[in-house]
Structures are given as structure tokens and as C-alpha cells.
Image (cartoon, rainbow, N blue to C red; front, side, top):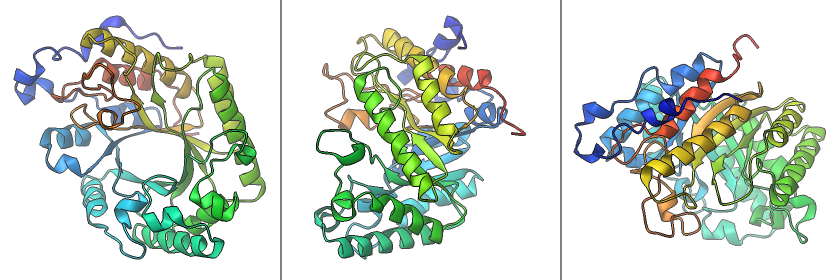
Length: 371
């Protein structure tokens, strides 16, 4: 496991205290960029963005300086792009994907089939024929519009939820209730028929730690992946979200996480870290201590993840704390009312220790070029 010098981790916090008063030039993205560091190891580095960057020019500037890929965070989710069955609104997603193309950056789609962010009619559908028709229209329309333009798609998001009433550890989503496990096969089949070039990915969370909950999810995921491959479902990658929450759950045991990654790789699948950030709900209130703890958690996680050659992509689920999902989520925002700090850049668009930890992890990663 790579050891990051404390001064390197804290260097990203140089403008934390008085950052809001500093001119923007004092907080430029460091060079080389995270995308360049990743590319030097045969990796791809991306950042999730939303159309809020149209109103936050500094956020846009940082994202374009750091990322080799942009990922629309909400604009391609079902309820956003098809708010009513058959009525599509592509404008927000188009603007972000047009920006990526104009900047010669890659882009990926998130997410075609998910149990949240659904129009009411889809969420309430249980009839197999009706659900099949809804999925077919949605996937073919959305994938068809962007066919050949995206690096990858999260085809099915968060299908795992072990429990006594959940067959094979699968979540009881509207899609599962209507079609059973076959909904996953159908989603991947439709996506492959419509966009043969995109890397089709199954995306999931809570697969890393040494807890009974994470262990049950790892086992259910490996069982599902094996079943899908035996059925020749056109899945090519597993996405591991990577929402870290130090102090909230168990610990990361490198040997356990590394063994899981090897098991996935042995199936011939690529692995993507798709939604990387650090939820600081349980971390101390002082900013310096909080940022140092978050950077250390990221360092430990990425040292294991990036050591696995099958890991080919790292995406942070945000750019700056000025625009983050955690503050709006009751389950994850801080109980003391302080603003969350999950992203590599703070709310003044200055690099944080988390950014330094990501950079050091990329530098330490084995070189995948030529493999």
C-alpha cells in the first residue's frame, strides 16, 4: 500500500481557511491534472457534473482542467430524460455531452434502469408486458440518441439488496416485481442492440468493507455476475460506486477488498470506480481534521482499488463542495448542520487534501498501458 507523505496530503488545503477571500487565480487546479496522471498509468479519470456548472463558471473551469471524462450526474436518469412515458427531454443531457465533445473529453451514461428517479407510471407498473414495453422504448430511445458517443453506460444500477424476502439477494424493484431477474438480461440486451460500442456496466455500492452487510452484498454480486455470464448477457464491466463514509460502517481490510476485485476480474470483466467521494457525516467538525481523515480514507481505498489491473476508470461523484449531493440527503448530511465536504475541491474551488490523495494514488498505481 502506497504511503502518502503528510505534507503532500495537506498541501491541497493551503487555501482552505481564507479561500473565499482569495482571487480565483490563487486556487487553480494543480498540474499535472488528475486526467494526465491517470493516463500515464493507462487509467481514465472522470468527474460527475450537472447543468449547475452553467451557473458556476469556476466549477466548470476546474472540471475541464482535471477530467478526461464528464458524467452527467442526474440528466440521464429516467425521470429527468423521460419525465412522462413517451415524452423525452434531452436538452439538459445534450448540453453536458456537447460540452464533453467540444472539449474532446469522453463521457459515460448514468443510468438506464434504476429503482429510483422513475416517473410514476413506471414505478407503479407490475404487468410484465407493460414493463417490457416501457423498458424497450426508454432504452432504445436514449441509447439510440447517444449511440457511438459514450464510453460506457450504467445499464442497471443498484440491483443488489440481500434480505430474507429477496431471492438471490436481488432488490425488489418495480422491474424485478414485473419481470424477475430477467429484467437485467433484457436491459443489457436492449442496450447492446442499440449501442454496440459502449461498455455496458452493472453499477453497485457497499462492496468494500469488512462487515457482514458488505460480505453478503459481495457474495450476492458475484453470484449474479456468474449467472449473467453463463446466460451470455452482454455485460462488460462492474461499476463499484465508492461512496466512502469513514466512521459510519466497518473498516477496509485490503485483503478482503482485493480478493473481491480479483474474483470480478477473473470473470473477464473490467472494473470501474464510478461515484468516488467521501461522506464526512461521522468525521470531526474542524475542517483540517475532517479533510485529513477524508484524504486518509481515500488513500487507503485507492491503494487497493488501483492496484488491481482490471480497474480501468475512476470517476469522482462531484467536483467541488459548492455543488454536492450530500447536503441534500437526510441520510448522509452532517447532523451538526455544517456543510458537507465530499469532493476534491472545496466550496471556493480550491484543491483539498482529498485531491492530493487521489493524485498520489494515481501516481502509485501500476501501469496498465500495453495490457
